[in-house]
Length: 229
Ligand code: AP5
Image (cartoon, rainbow, N blue to C red; front, side, top):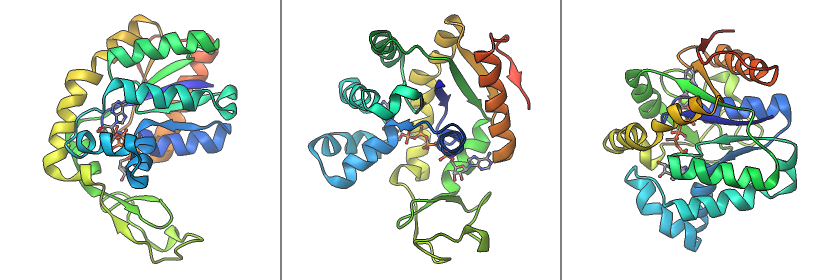
């Protein structure tokens, strides 16, 4: 399975990627995670990317494309992948198409996670990440309760907020999504790859919708409409 999860910040791409990884045994390739890793390590690439990320803008295409080329070339991506947060604009989509053609591994589907702006805002302001075990929580929808026990932290998670989840940065990220990423919806619709999923449901229901959308696609495709499980 080779898919792109497309959607605004906070639409649930990361959450669903994790479930898809478990279900299909293929890697999640998240440009956001790769960039945050580079920032945390203080690499040259990370230092270059940090200012753009902290202000909610996109990191330059050349940097992101270099990362993707390297990551898709690793052996685990040969059996499939979930692209999370990439591509983010038309130039990146065209570069991806050229790269996948070169590798002989075309996309099966692009799944759009459809969600209202108001819900996105709440999901982003509520997101908290455990600094120790890396689990993602939400103070509104999935606070760390007793069930959130982890091997590393027990019940004592050390929760932090992503710097770009502050209210003043979220507005900019949503603006960038509207201007630069949203045109990909038409682009992939034109390519016959787009599947739209209602992302305003609980995590398991959204997962079922994605599985359904992708199954339909690999079985020959249906029209690009909102699919429910
Ligand atoms: P990136 O890390 O890609 O962030 P994003 O696209 O803004 O997406 P998020 O990670 O914020 O949200 P998500 O959709 O994964 O939602 P999640 O599952 O966590 O990018 C960050 C920055 O890096 C960019 O701004 C840019 O600077 C740079 N960058 C990255 N890629 C780039 C590229 N290709 N080109 C250039 N620059 C790039 O869920 C959010 C919250 O909601 C969580 O708390 C979760 O628990 C909760 N939640 C999830 N699903 C549900 C549900 N169904 N019901 C209730 N709550 C839910």
